[in-house]
Image (cartoon, rainbow, N blue to C red; front, side):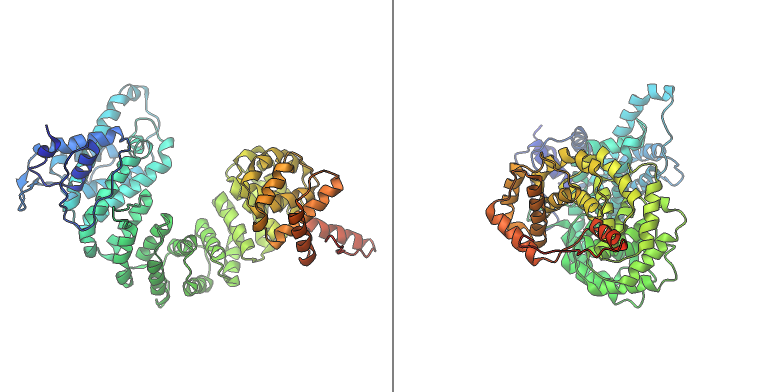
Length: 605
């Protein structure tokens, strides 16, 4: 049958248009109830489930109880099942499937809300032998049920009111977030895993179709959304990691922001937090939204209505998108500092707040002291995840906020861990970088990080490896076994290094006195030459010290004359920055009654 004729008698929904495009229809009706055109659909391969959805959509056009709509289209009569007493995903899905032809948008919204709730509950564990024998059949049956309900959801999108649309989207967003995070840990054949396979493993296209359709259907009624619904709506898109773009180049997040900006004064604390967090999480910056959002928060009499997590999310959002708003940061810092204690702040919130203020270059010493004092009085530091530990010390170092007791307690805690497997490579390098930058000498911590770094060296990128070796050299932790062991990885990454990373690596190996001929060779010189115009004075001075060391080793590796001259000039004009090792040596000599000259400037620096 001709595809166009097949749908001539029904209203052309966006999903029907999408299906026609994917099926290669020769003529596509272009009349839609909105001003924004649908996204361009490419000819990329579609998954099996998308094909099933398209097939079910077309076949459903001539089945099921319906009534004639006023616009000449066809519309079902609706009657929703009572799903309030359902206890499991299987139970609620079976009930929804049994009534799928008659469910209203409100019933569909309630279904996805319940599924998202049940999905976050613990799965029942591995199936028994009897269950395993029936697993394939059950899995196919449930997959079919999900397909049918997805199709019903898409069919009803355009007739949704704003509350039902927001509720449906929030349910789907939570499902996609949870399924994406935990699908690999779920028992085979469970509804959790089926949803994971539908929406994550094979479902990128599926997810995009769902959220594209919802986005386009929302445009005509966005002005009807109340503050909570609009905030939850865009929050759901962030959970699902979907950022629809339209054919005319406009971004859906910007369209929602335009609708939100004049109404921000009606947003409560959670609404504001969710809206800003959603834009930052998806990296969909909108300076007008953030300026008005910041002004709205600053104008409030107090921030007592804001939950700690909301405060954390707000400053994290501004720092993540590099949206400056000094008065907002001042207002929030003052609010936190005035609190009796920070017991209600979860470890991740403390980490995010300190990270945000350091990243935004907003200096509030009292805020950092308040956070540090809260951390060191916590009974269970095990509640702090590796990322939080790393971010906190990184933030204090970046903001140049000294708190020796904090650094000692965190060092003792990390050193006492069985291993550092939970730390990502960049977290390990940030950790020792922070301790070195603040001149906090904790040899046991550095030793533990060295062992982990050697074992996992191939996981490091060029910034991570450069910061790591710099931290050990700068802190006087001269572990030659570490530097020698890292030589193959450093040699592989050096071609990807920027000018500062090259200088850090060269200087660190010079301080450690590890020759590393496979790193420092003609290729290294060529890379330095290619970056000659990018080196800062400090980096040139570091390279100069490395060149002097090469001469001491009597190698034939020399910088080109033009670069060597720049390095020499930088070394003479730059104030020396002695390493901790140098300070220790001077201290020992001085305690012996000697009076060494700590720095001696020669013609070569």
